[in-house]
Length: 142
Image (cartoon, rainbow, N blue to C red):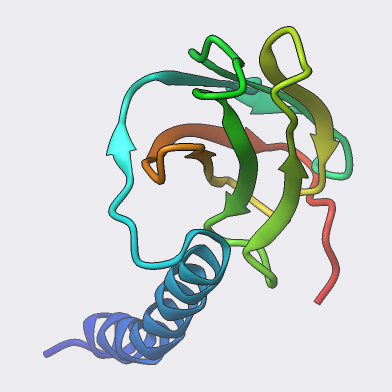
């Protein structure tokens, strides 16, 4: 084994526990937000730029297909960044009085990563949408 391949193997072994901790933190943050419900793909759209020039201000929009009636509406929308130091980015609580289930905001991202949006519906279902973005200049410290 060459010195370069030994070094690469050691770096991979060091990174593995950090990645596992990040995945565990993300899973814990999502469970805290939505409980034990298993998210379903579809029924909502998450839009953010494929390339964010400044990680301190990444615009995004989440739209959920919902009639927004008293019987059937979106209760909350939660945003998570998979590689940020703190995965929970934002939570929005909606009312059936809204005309549509849509939120627009700007978030801070540390590096290239995936953003996950979860929408909790009044019937207890949870919808999920994901989007990838590349960050030219990181927006998080630490």
